[in-house]
Structure formats: C-alpha cells, structure tokens
Image 1 (cartoon, rainbow, N blue to C red):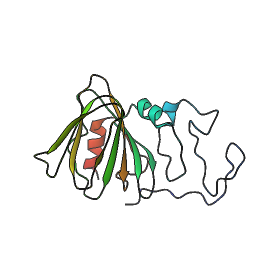
Image 2: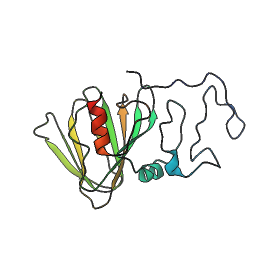
Image 3: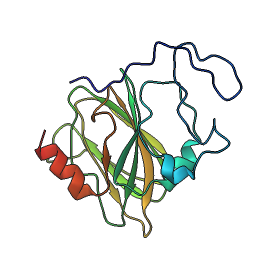
Length: 177
C-alpha cells in the first residue's frame, strides 16, 4: 500500500518570494503569518519539507491519533491518551518506532512475545524510547491528565491523512483493513 503523495512538479513561491524547488509550501504555524490557530493545522502535510514546533502541536493534539507527516520512509504521528488509556499491546513486524513523551506519565512495556513483556519502565515529560521492529509493546497513561506524545514510524504505518479521534475509532479502522 502506498501512503505517499508526490510533490508538485511546479516551482511555487513561498512567503518570502523564494522558490521551493518543486515543492508546495503547506500553510503551517511556521511559514504563514495569517495561519489559523495551531489546533486547526493538525493534518498530514505529506512528503513535503516541513517545519513545526513539535512541542506545541503535540500538546495541542486532542485526537487519539493524528498523522502529521507521511513520507516514503517514515511517518510522524501525534497521540493523546486519556488517563488510564493505553495504545494497546501491538507488534509491527517490519517497522521501527521512536516515541517521545511531551507531557504526562506512562508505563512502557516491551518484549519478544505478547504474554511476557521483559522490559517495563515509567516515562515522563521529555523521555524518549525506541521499539525495534518485531517487538511487542504497549504504552499506558498512568497520569491524571492526558498523555501527549509523538511517534515516528519507519516505514509509515498508517495511511496518509489518518486521524482517529478516539481509540475506538482506531480499533475500528484496524478491523476494516
């Protein structure tokens, strides 16, 4: 399945009048003085050059899952887990995954099989962890406020433009694959 969009072949001027070498510049909080509030900018910007304040967009995300950037080889996804909510035990056979906690407190679990995670650790604001391909893992929000995090999948895991407002929406989408 190809999750990528191709960049425009035409050169488009950006806000400073310079050329973008074939890429359309998406409106984002960093490149438009008239951009709407950051929470209205949470969408997948595709395989285009992109600059964003990752702290602000991660904390602004209210959805369980929002893909922010999907390229050919990786994908940036924002997540927000309610108190007590978890991602759910999963394993991506051919996908390495990087996580960073922006705000909150969680327990991460990892292991070689689904029944006995042999690695467990509490993580907090500014902690990062990596899940190698083929590793079972779960993230559980153990705090009293929403857990705000982002994850980078390599290669992409979700279709371009994925937004799942709730975990139930994410589970329904997985069943319909």
